[in-house]
Image 1 (cartoon, one colour):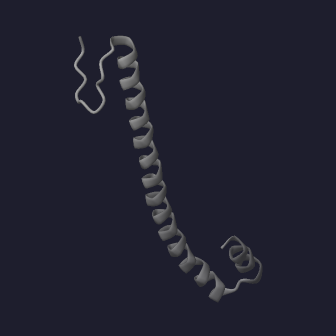
Image 2 (image 1 turned 180 degrees about the vertical axis):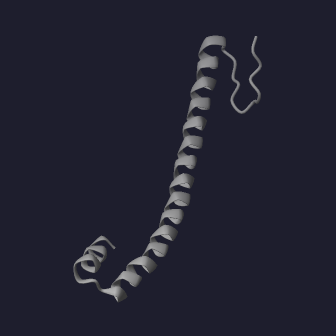
Length: 78
């Protein structure tokens, strides 16, 4: 699109100008699709990190209190 824009500027090619304008719609759609995919990807890994943090906390409670709290929710404070 940038090369097309430069060519349109230099040559005044009206047909190419209209194509560049039309191509912007495709780029906008690609942007929306990539945003959704990346958001899904990042969200999945945030959830994965939270699961690991939960596992570490369960191990710490076991080390400190000798209680196995794996898969018991919610953790009740003493």
